[in-house]
Image (cartoon, rainbow over all chains, first blue to last red; front, side, top):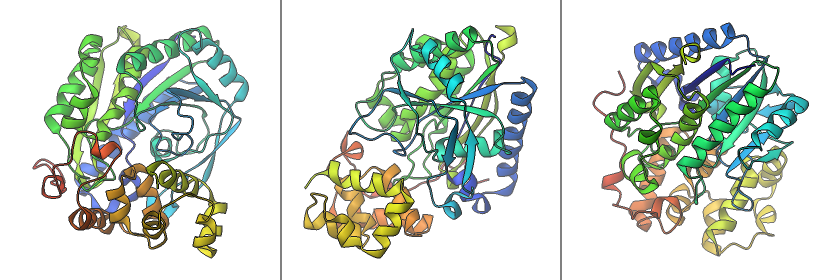
Length: 275
Length: 116
């Protein structure tokens, strides 16, 4: 089936872990946008959701760091973080190793990926699922792009990965949805936490909404680091979704900086039907 | 001894409840197999969040370690700032990639449009 859904969202741990410290008005608008994304995802009737994340050393370390990895298990567990700190209880999330295997086999025609039959979810997947599949009843295929441990995956390879994901989704009989998750500009977990470059974010989201490949790839990592912090490296997940939705234009349903969440909080989707 | 080994230990601790329980019972014993300098060992055991950040531990690893020790968010950020003030710029790793401007340049300054 052709890809049924494509969107992006933030995943910062403060979104669920420091909820009481945020301004309730903007926070609730953000949560409402997340719920709108949930409804749109459900309306697409997916059989499985591919979550393209930028995991944070929960599974992959510098002893063997893949540029790309995709999960291939029947069950995933998370979060690895302290549950009180993250505000999300330990849960089991359904996977489907046979579906993952067929999906990965297709992806490999276009991109070299590592596969993983074990995968612990951190906030990078748990926060989106908390809002998008709150009953944890949708089959998840986790996918990761190395956005944390340099040398990082080049942006144009992240684009190619997204194209491979699209080709794989289109080739399978199941209805596949894809959500990319990460920050735009942010300096998470550092003394700069709370700093957000709103102008840079809005410019990036404009490129994303237009699905302008050349503009999306027109950054160096040094530029991203200077303007958008080390958290900005996670734009790779957004870029991969753009490639998966190539030809479609996007709508930003919500973008507001919420410093206590340490990120410009974002919910956006592509209109695949019009592409 | 090496930032790699220091981060490797924290990575393994962060993702294993079993190791966490063992570590809480015997910190020095669990650390013994790791080739760490005295400074690194002390920074972990204390824990000295500011020193660990100064040594170059990635915040995505350090953040989980701080949460494991029930260190509140604001306190976590302040400990890193204090560590930079005491020890100086980050020695190596991601945060040393383009040079470090110093504590003042890196204080959390929410944007004027934030926090509404």
